[in-house]
Structure formats: structure tokens, C-alpha cells
Image (tube, helix red, strand yellow):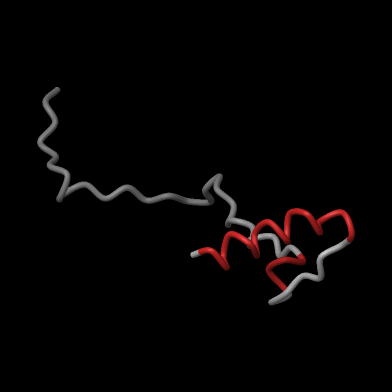
Length: 56
């Protein structure tokens, strides 16, 4: 049995489907705030980044 269909002639219809819509991106605190206050644990990291920016 030869198929006379071409991709243009054939339209697949999906009923029901098994795909769910994608969940929205998770909003983390860093995305909700424009600035994050550095903690005592971050001081060395922040200072190093500020020094690198100052040298640029």
C-alpha cells in the first residue's frame, strides 16, 4: 500500500495531549531585589569584586 501523502497534505490532530504547560520561572530573592545587602560572611568576596572593578 503506497502512501500518496505529502507533508503539506497531512495534518495531524492532537486530542487531549500529554504535555503540560511549563511552570513559570522561580522568583528568587536576588531577582526580586535590585540590591542584596552583604552579610559578614560575604565581606571578603564583595571587597575583592569592588577592588577588581576599581582597577578596570
